Image: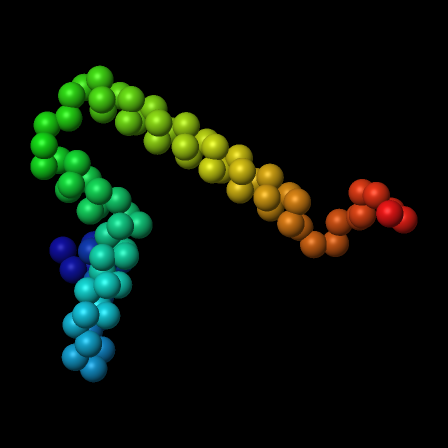
Length: 87
């Protein structure tokens, strides 16, 4: 179990007895993995229609965010020519 990749990726070491900082790091890791949200979501029954709407919304959001990230990276790239020279 300890050699499992997901277990190792979620292991947090406490340094100098600072448990609060390690707890914050662990919460951040779990939030990025979506574990905390999945646990909160599974507390109550979710109707199938609401689950479909949520999954569709999340898919649309992923597509939108990836497209916007691609556009921003395109505009922010270095060494591009000035589109309006002399202005």
